Image (cartoon, rainbow, N blue to C red; front, side, top):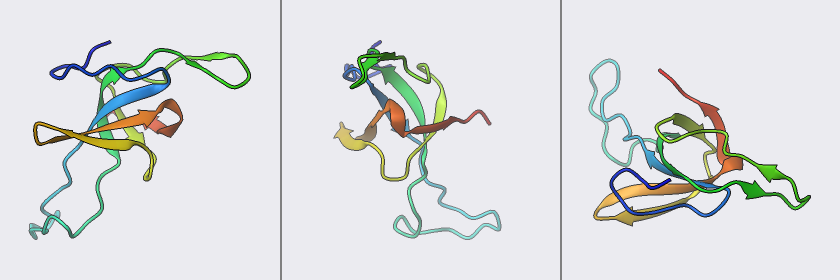
Length: 101
């Protein structure tokens, strides 16, 4: 499946995510500088690669679909920047949960 507004198709076993922006203000209204906190680990699935073939020869389907919001591993994925916007390629294994709030 193609990404929504960029023409990237992940390889088999990978997803293309758009990470959510970090909060810049606390609940009490304090403004945080850009480098004050960690990046969130939540993103929106933009594209899904083909089924992954494991070392054992079995086929593994994607745990999510395009449009899902997911929580991914803290150090998972590879960041890329296109036209000033950040995206993230993650393996199917890097997805911890589907996050619908």
